[in-house]
Length: 359
Ligand SMILES: [Fe+2]
Ligand SMILES: [Fe+2]
Image 1 (spheres, helix red, strand yellow):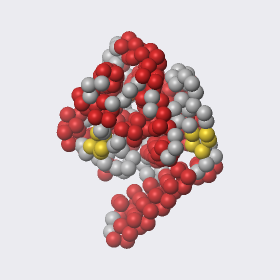
Image 2 (cartoon, rainbow, N blue to C red):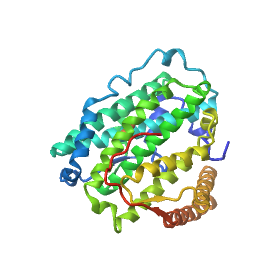
Image 3 (cartoon, helix red, strand yellow):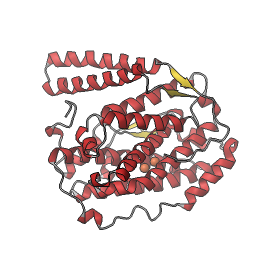
Image 4 (cartoon, rainbow, N blue to C red):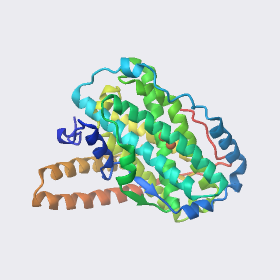
């Protein structure tokens, strides 16, 4: 186990612990967002109208309507997990329910605050899907007696304001990387069904197609506003790609036992997820990060090592460790900046925006 794995003092024993964990604000924990609803109300999707209408027909068709129904597997098939693995699995579920619910709250707020029919209708579908996802995960937490208080979370969790363009970059990436993560886990259990230690993983394949489609909506919204994808904005794209990839890399390394139980190597899994996400994101971003280059990989490892050192200094406390943390935070900032400046791979954008979930 690495030093950044879950400490026993952070362990989740009660539903209050689960909600407290979901409420926690840290650099790698999922957050809640708000945005400029009036600006979102002005989005004109006419440059991508044909593809937009096809996508909206798919949302309306709702092919996952009957998918998020629990079967008796949830009560009969759950094995008792070793306590440390159970904590990492709970951490995974709590972070997942928080990010599903974060999407649900944001989409619902946009829905309530716009009257642009295209955006309002889209947000209605997105809210529907994310609410299903969040409730489905929370039921699994409930099996452990550890459901997160979603109403309390909505009332009390800090909400961060993001300009619409940052919402497009960040939400697009989180939907697409969510697809890539779930499909890789699904493929692994297809090959090794004996490793599937919880029934929820059987839902991932159809589930991630929802996330893929959510990403398509943001791709179309961005392609309808081409200014977001060129000039100085490409630096914002580099920033968000780097932030999303680095966060995932550091966070996954805090769950070594979870990945071991799934029979996966964390680094191999993460780089595969990055490759899939980068491939998909060529539909909208004119550049991808060179995640397979040794320099980029070394930067991610450096961030991981700094995260371990910060965690250790935080736990030990004291003035000396406080100074140490300031230094570590500065070197994390420099490492992150170097990753943003690392040479990227440039692409032309395809004429047809939409792409299929083919992984
Ligand atoms: Fe979702
Ligand atoms: Fe989603």
